[in-house]
Image (cartoon, rainbow over all chains, first blue to last red; front, side):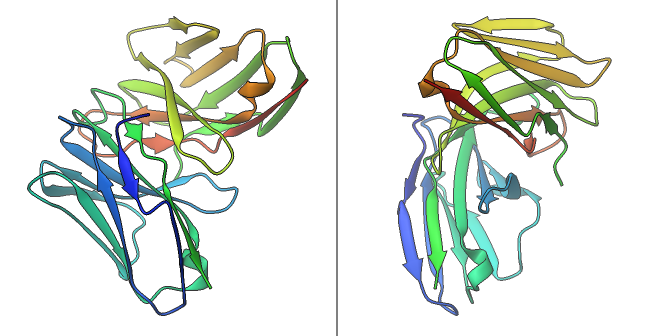
Length: 114
Length: 111
């Protein structure tokens, strides 16, 4: 158990819908990261928050947004869903920034858009 | 974009053999990490090696880092069927806010 909790584990929804993925980082970790992994693909960086502030954006679509709350949990909102958004979405957390420490990953949310 | 490329993309070995996978990256780094992912599951952190380290061990894992060649290798000794998984390297760099992952090596250990 990495200490990073993601909910829900599985999500099936229809095209055009909106969903929210939730992440609770490890206790004491200030950085939260979101990654997307499509079938048989590598991990694509979406967005990162450090102590409540957005610090980096990657290949995140405009239909997607995220936030980190004062208690440091984070949510990833995906709207106007398309079939191609079906993927595993991972949250990770680290106590410090990437140059200094490792990240620990949650079990992921498997999103299926039908 | 992926910074790292892993080699080979897929590897199939017999139980008891050693497995070696390589990771190359493009920019200077402060650390490199290796992760394991069982099919469709989360990534499990295996080991971190810092840029001033050349080799690190953890159980049956041995990681080397050659910053002059911008490459790392992960050796799993005496492999077991349970080692069957995808293995990813990820780099961390000061002044950045993301880990950059390699494309992964799919390891299959045959019993």
